[in-house]
Length: 113
Length: 107
Image 1: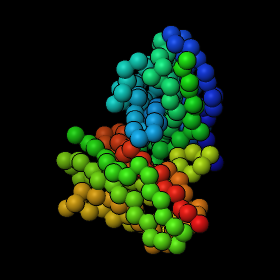
Image 2 (image 1 turned 180 degrees about the vertical axis):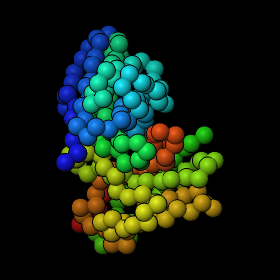
Image 3 (image 1 turned 180 degrees about the horizontal axis):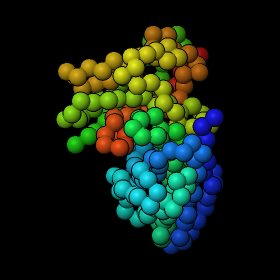
């Protein structure tokens, strides 16, 4: 069975903290994605990666960075968390070229106080 | 620019009534469109893709290039259809999602 896991379901951090969100997939997928999900705004792509050590900016990369040192793991980093980064974060993976069939993790609800 | 618009944030219908979730897109090339669904406390998952021309859980969606639309339809709604629905457009190596429509089926 396809599996995408995220390190935390709920996370509470303070403004200015450095935050790491981890995502692991066990499907040997090349492509991995980070989205944020906000009511009324839908899913917005933050960053994606199509190979180890490769990364591409999505639609809203400001305030975020990513790391892909291993094929199965894709980390999202908030260098200095701010309250407007309070959101639900979804990780996904897919096998090229079928970018359309993305497999999603359960999500991490991040609250920045 | 690639863009997906779902004009309804919320949609509420009665059980047994027809359902139509609207999706419009903007894309200069040949579009590939999809519907994803997220049931309560579950992960977001692919529901159907227009290429397959399939019916999943009674839902169908037809790509209308003239109207640049990909509306999701079901003739008789069921309570288990209550969920968040996202329309998506394939771009280069990524998907562009719409804002989502929360569908509620009333008993």
